[in-house]
Image 1 (cartoon, rainbow, N blue to C red):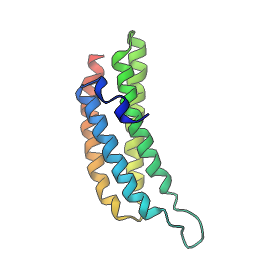
Image 2 (image 1 turned 60 degrees about the vertical axis):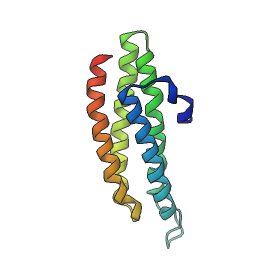
Image 3 (image 1 turned 180 degrees about the vertical axis):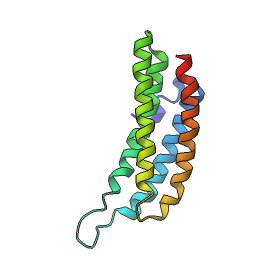
Image 4 (image 1 turned 45 degrees about the vertical axis):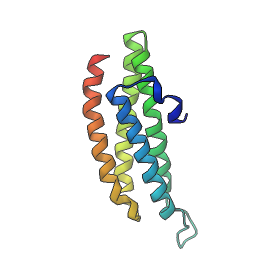
Length: 131
């Protein structure tokens, strides 16, 4: 799902931060992807290329999960989606750490993404209390 499809549905701080993280992830993945797209000397692709797709997929999934949690009718349903947001943000953080070990100039931007993820986690903590 493209972020434009759910952009105007919510203006919560955590949702807006999720959109920022998606945009940043996509740009970093594109930049790193160009460096990792070439085949290695042994004819195989760099395994780090998969982590670029993972950070984009995980970051684009944050927004819809936040919206589902915020619009859920029952507490159990809201907490299920909030837990999903937590899992996604944890996976995203771990994949950033993995990408920092690849051979690319784009990895210099990953600390910026991890910093934004730390801010997201702080927002997430207060957001979960309001659900």
